Image (cartoon, rainbow, N blue to C red; front, side, top):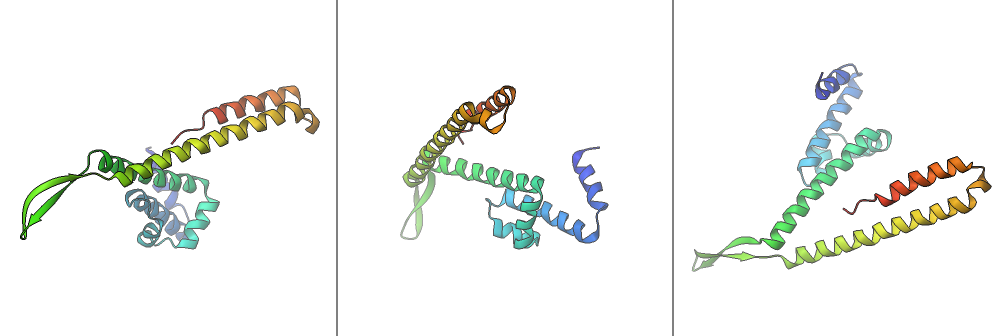
Amino acid sequence: MPQEEQSKQEIKKLEPKQRAIEVRKKKFLEVLAGNGGNVSNAINVSKLGRRMAYKQFADDSTFADKWIEALDASNDELLTEARRRGKEGVEEPVFYEGKEVAKIRKYSDTLLIFMIKQSEAQKKWRQRIIQTGNLALSVLQTRGSDIGLTADQIEDLQLAMTEKFTSVPLV
């Protein structure tokens, strides 16, 4: 059975109030993914309610993950459009005496400046995260036995931490 069908079957088994919340959560995520990440708009369209939305975000990790994915997808879409406008420009009509006489291509240096700043900021944060991970690894190596960890536990933690901190994505 496809996942969407299974999800519908699970929703049907719920109490009416919980079923209504689940339907609204689903609508909220759909709207959020398609509206540029506007949470207020998604709350209004889905009729989920702001308090309920944030309560569900805190209580339901699957919903929270999907919310973040929807925001990421919206952000990616906005960044793609900003890049396009900055690099390829946008055609705008030129009018003379009320008549369109030509089209000119305008570029957005401002969009490119903000995108470059964002990229640089992300690089700095990534480096800080890696430095924090390296510091934590150093403390684990020197003081792990002091808190009752065995050599195998320390090694397992080091491997897990190294994997996590070296795979920090540069968004």
